Image (tube, rainbow, N blue to C red; front, side, top):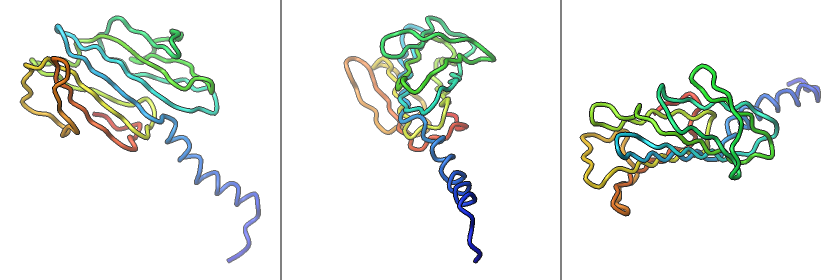
Length: 168
């Protein structure tokens, strides 16, 4: 085998490493869905470490109220574009919290999660809180845990290496 020049070695190394770095931008993504009174309150916490500024696009349902994006207790500026909230986050930002209320996850007396991570995530945790008298005909995908907690039922899922294009 011929000797490869140092520049080609560097290019090959970057081609191998860059996709891994980009795929691990979100350390964990935790979405909490609280079903109550005919609406769903979503709190989505994204924890990450960035090397440079990034425009983070957060998918939104068609109907929502009480929208807020914050980090470190401070509300962040954002714009709406094509069904997404776009917020600029930089290397000093390590957590973003998105909150809103919606009825879009409630269909025919059922709760239906529509979840997509804005970036690939090492871990995704989904938690759903419903009244303890809630009757679920079907839970799909299979829940990791179902427990009663303070008058509610808590249903949880955990996914590892969650691809950005994956949707639940």
